[in-house]
Structures are given as structure tokens and as C-alpha cells.
Image 1 (cartoon, rainbow, N blue to C red):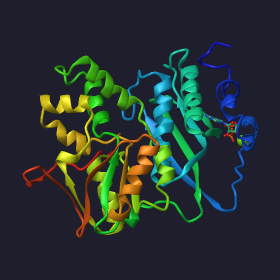
Image 2 (cartoon, rainbow, N blue to C red):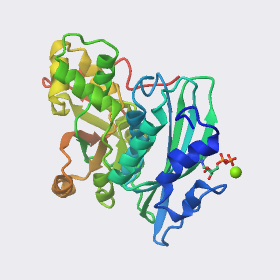
Image 3 (cartoon, protein in one colour):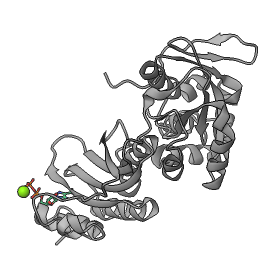
Image 4 (tube, helix red, strand yellow):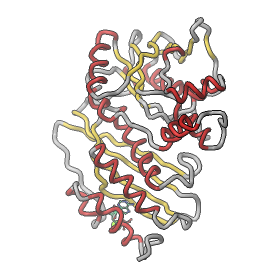
Length: 329
Ligand code: ADP
Ligand code: MG
């Protein structure tokens, strides 16, 4: 059989996907109509799905490996935001005629890498041929102790707002990948494009936030937009201090070349970092947990009475942004 296209969809599933299902008995080696998942009585399943399409969520000629990793990791980030431990996933692929011959083995390789990195197993899916762009979907299942999923709706006035890692790398990285930011040094471009292609979901930290955080979400649309989702679900507002927003040195470099990029940092999205609200009384505990899993955590603001996310510069003037985050429509 040539690597791609395969002789049949069944050959393709057997060759590339079945090996990824072996550690979950209920996947039946992808040979039955559906999978079964048993879960212990004191746990509940958390379910999330992300769709990705060439040209919007990834660059068409990115490698199959990084596309697979981004697809899986964006879903892992949603599980982390709910405090869930990864368990299993189902994969939907609408493949196109123009894939490179080794694209599928790269794609399966990326999945295999992240399955062992994050402890999750393929249990099923669907495979079709698309005459349109390459289109992928993934549904991930995670587990939390019953009744303990961390919701967006629990933020309280007085809570402190933290964010993991650094913000804005991915949005600026996409600009660099598109040939903008010509003055940015190559090392910075490379770093930022890497952050766009392969996010780092905060899976280990997510699990540790159960019973500690009052509200969490992951930053996919943009920091202001996603904190806005916490605010509207919790009927509160938030104040953010611009000086406390954590930037990588590459992003700092880019913002120094063009100060307008700070809007990208706050509204560009695709960060897959966690926004975490906690009462001040548990902030030391939170910082210790983050340190225990080697995740950098920055306090960026607080929850206040109101309904909006307000961003303040060092001289206390409020900044305004045209858009709060990425919108598909
Ligand atoms: P159906 O005909 O009901 O759509 P399929 O013949 O497409 O079922 O699928 C057969 C088996 O292969 C099922 O267990 C399904 O979950 C699995 N499968 C199909 N495509 C994928 C995929 N892309 N990734 C993982 N499992 C898949
Ligand atoms: Mg069937």
C-alpha cells in the first residue's frame, strides 16, 4: 500500500489509528461500532470538543505532527480548565487529496507523542474524504471527582486573578509565520511560531486546582474575552494591570518594535494558558501547587463588583481595545 492515499479507510484506521488505542480495552482495537468507557463510581466524565480547519487554526503546510499535537492539546487545555485528568479521545478527520505521502504517519506520531506525555488514549472516531480544506475534530474525555468540576461561574468579588505561563506568544507567532514582523530577530520568530504551533496545556496544574480555585478557564479566544466569560458567568467584573501581564522575552522584543502589539497579546488568543481565580487566603497554596509542577504563575489582577474586564496601564489610565478576542462570525 502506498502511504497516502490508502487502499481504504479501514486500512488507514488499522495502520495509523488502531495502534494508538491499545491501552484502552474498551476501544476494542477500533474494530467495533463504538467504544465503551467504564469509570469509577466516585468520578464523573468531563467532555469537550474542538474543531480545526486548515487556514484558520493551523497553517496548511504545517507538519502533520504539529497539527495533531495542536488538535489534541487544545482539548487537553479545556480538560485542564475544568480540573479534569485526561482519559480518552475520539478523532474525526476529513482528509484531502493534497496531503504529503508521509502526512498520516507524522500525524499519528504527533498523537502518539502526546498520548504518552499527557496520559490519554484514542478510543474511536470517524474518517472521511473532503473535497474542501483539511478539517479535523477531536472529542476528549476527562475525569474529575464527582461534583468537583471547576466552573467559570464561581468567581467572587475580592478573588485574585492569576494566569499561567506567558500570554500573546501564539498570536504574535502567527503574524511572524505570515511574514509580518520582519524586524524581529530569528530566534524570537522561531520561538513564537513554535508557541502557535504547539501549545502547552496546563494538565498537571489543572488537576491540582480542584477544591482550590473558585473559577478557571483557558485562554483560547483572547485573555480579555476569556476573562470576560468568567465575569459574565459569575456576575462580576475584573481589573487587570497591564504591567503584570507575563510576556516571554520574544514577545517583549516584538512589543518593543511595535507597541500596538500589546492589543494582540490581550485579545489575540490561542494561548491555552489557564486563567485562575482564587480567594486571597489560598493564594500561597496555589503558588506552591504551581511550583510543584513547574508552572510559572503571575497575578494579573482581581475580581471586582461590575460586569466588565478593565485593563489599566501603570499610570492608572484605562486602556480600550477594538475587539476583546477572536470571533469566527
Ligand atoms: P461507521 O461506519 O459506523 O462510521 P467506521 O467504519 O467509520 O464506523 O469506524 C469503524 C471503527 O473505526 C469505529 O470503532 C470507529 O470509532 C473507528 N474509527 C474510524 N475512524 C477513526 C479515526 N479517525 N480515529 C479513530 N478511530 C476511528
Ligand atoms: Mg459502524
